[in-house]
Length: 402
Length: 181
Image (tube, each protein chain N blue to C red):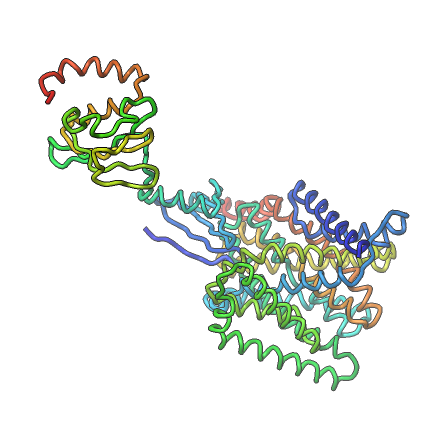
């Protein structure tokens, strides 16, 4: 126990250092947590003879809780009403984003000779932009008060909803394994479980309200954690994505009066577990994999192929929202950022016990991809002025001719 | 004046208030409670002015609303019942000659020309204090009387080491002679 406790302490200390570095440079903590995991893994520190941390049950468990809480909060912040309110704009922008970016990933996977499942996983990884990193940048840059925040946040809402669906199906397919019939059965079980959850959310808002109507702050937190983790765990046991289950539980609470209390009291828990999740991802990544030309080459191809696509779809969604060219360019720059969701999908693949591509190549590439794209997207946003000049010069040329 | 409210999913709410023809005030209320206030001119970028924590935002809001009131215990406040009758709150300072004396000792009503209708001490108010009530430092005497009589009580209640008070007393005394009861 002493050794385990000490290792836990080391892990959190490493995360604290990583976070401090991130804050110093004023970048999102996510890539730094991942890198810290990579560094103290047996692959790096271990191979250098330095003390290293090995992935083990307690870290995996905390990482799982990280996924659960990340998705719980996503559901908490999600509002069906909001979605319906701007459904036209969100629908168009979201559909465009999906129609361009998901197939690009799938196409690259297929071109490499991968199976449909593997290509589908790759597609999801490159499709989804990072809500966490983009939102942080929006706030840091003050863009949150500008018009360009609307298409970005709107598209992210659409993506979140799609990813919930995507994860549900993907989990069912991956965990179902085997034959087509088994997969179909698994998908049916998943859909059934989720249908029950959705119904509970839709019809049972009174129960959600009453469940947390307790005076004691302690009881409040314990109850909230209990129901979230229990349902998520139960879902996973049934072969359903625990992330999606947590998402719906969060959604169930989003309509209650407890929304603000939940946010206030559970955010610290979420931050701790989520940090471990990113650490764990890094811990299980062998960076020497990128030494191979094949993997490094794949990474380059992905970055080169999926950056302009997001720039384009982001720009067009800005126009869909009625923004001028300059602000639409900003939307494009922001949407380039990938992050936590790509890693969640990668984690799913890593735990699948499937082919080498699925269980090893894709997760490793995903880590490298996210590290690059999270930084790239953030830089694009910070230096959006350069991109804007590109568009504005064209405009002034045309207006100059008037 | 229109206020536009919009949702910022995952962040909070945004309020846009038209200040002038071309200028807008943008307030972003985060789910965490933090408020950020920006100013926007026409089509240009919003310029962040400041941010406030939840608690501070509420206080600032109340001040802006004009409803913020903090009782200032060290000053005197007055209410006129008519032009010759004032209701005053007088704080008894350290070093005042009233300290340690009862109302009877001082023959308060005769000497000052005012009636003490209540004494506020810490958070408690004793109304209609008896003649044997002792005055202590930090008390607030709620008195009724003519403006001059109230001034007299104020001087007595003040600490005696304020040179301005002594000069004022010296200046006032000749005029006071006619009105002394």
